[in-house]
Length: 228
Image (tube, rainbow, N blue to C red):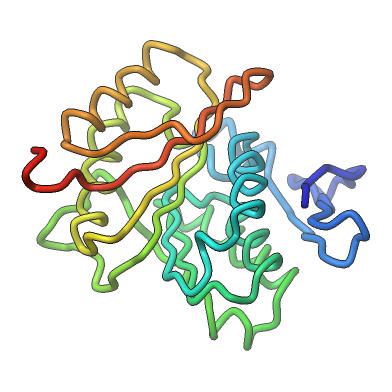
């Protein structure tokens, strides 16, 4: 159960990559990501190492996702979710979210590279979600069992609204759990994120740490009311 890159071919402004999910190559993802458009500030147009680490962690513990309604924040080009959906057919539904129509368009293209339109319609939703505008008043209509996110703590300015969005989604379902993976590029920024989670009365647990890449995976849940 692993993912690794195979040689990439360039297609204009994007890179097409094949990623193996199983050693016998019986399951694989064909994935396209943009490199040139990163200069426009659209970080979601590329794949980041924490997505691969979180995917690897969850494939080893796939029971955590079985029969679950999943939402991914900052899904970007879709690598994490598409990998998990290819690996397991027991995921109930998967909602990919990001803030940019350009990013969501790339995500749709990647979904179509790997799944039929019927499979996409049956299990996947691709939706715009801006953490800066997310609130109880315009809360997502659906209730989720699991929240996923990878490499979403890239700037101190996003932390407050990201944490607020996570908390709102957790409040919709008291049994909901979040798994967040981040490469720790700036320790001060990451510490600010962790502190904001604790101040929002969330239970924060480190479940895996890849020291070689400075990637931490944390599990989040609402604290019991009597602990707040």
